[in-house]
Figure 1 (cartoon, one colour):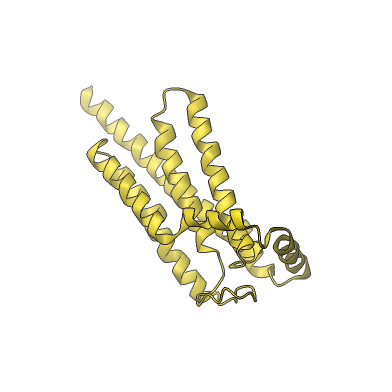
Figure 2 (cartoon, rainbow, N blue to C red):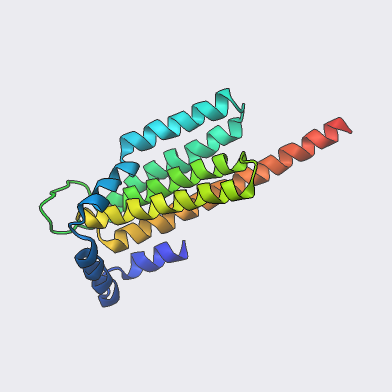
Length: 195
C-alpha cells in the first residue's frame, strides 16, 4: 500500500514523468509484448476465475477458497473500476483512443490478482516444493509481461502499471492472510472435536 500511495501522490513529479517517458520509448511498438495483454483481458480473467471457483467447489469442497477467489479477483475488479474513475488520469496520447481512465492499470492489477491466486491454490497441491516454486515463477513472469504489455501497446504509462501491481499485491496479501487465519481456526476446531 505504501508503494501505491507513493505513486498516487507523486506520479506527476519529474522523476515519474521521466520514468514513464523512458519506459514508453523502450517498450512502445514491441508487437509481441503488446499481444500479451490478452492474459489479463476481462473475459479471460472471468473465465479463469470461474474455472478456479468451480474446481475449488467440485474437486476440493473448499468454500473459503471460493470466497478467496471472489474477494481477490471479483472485489479487486470492482475496486479497480472505482479507482480508475476516482483518480481521473488520462491515458498516453497515442492513437489507441481508449475511453476509460488510466490509473491504476486494470490489466496489471487484475493480472496479478488472478495469476497469484491461481498460483496460490495450484502450488498448495504440488507434491514437490520445486514444482510449487516453478508455478510461482511462471505466475510472476506472466504478471510482469502482462503489465509491461500495456506500456508496449500505449494504453498505460509505467506508473499506472506499477500502481496496479502495488494495489493488486496488497489486496492479494490481505486476502491470503484472511484465508490462512480462517484455515488455522478451522483446523484447530477440527482437532478439538477429534480430541
